[in-house]
Length: 118
Image 1 (cartoon, rainbow, N blue to C red):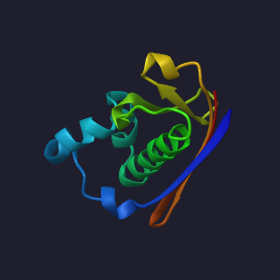
Image 2 (image 1 turned 90 degrees about the vertical axis):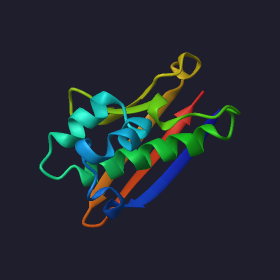
Image 3 (image 1 turned 180 degrees about the vertical axis):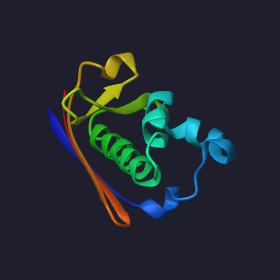
């Protein structure tokens, strides 16, 4: 079975997020590896927004055949050695699914598109 998900977000939603002031929110949505990657950039907002989009796209795609609630912190968006992004599911029963993910950000928008095969 194959399913797709897509999401688009305003980068401004993440513009003023800091580890000092927003850690509780950030830890509910992002993993420590994701936060480390995003905040090593001068402007973390586009990277946070793109990963948020990716998580939402994954949830949308999985909703077609997975009936349990998935927390965003159980979906990890990482970069491969070649620089492409990948989905790392932290829920054991979803680790066998195959994900193809594309994310992008430009000016004030971030977007993600995912195809999942189970």
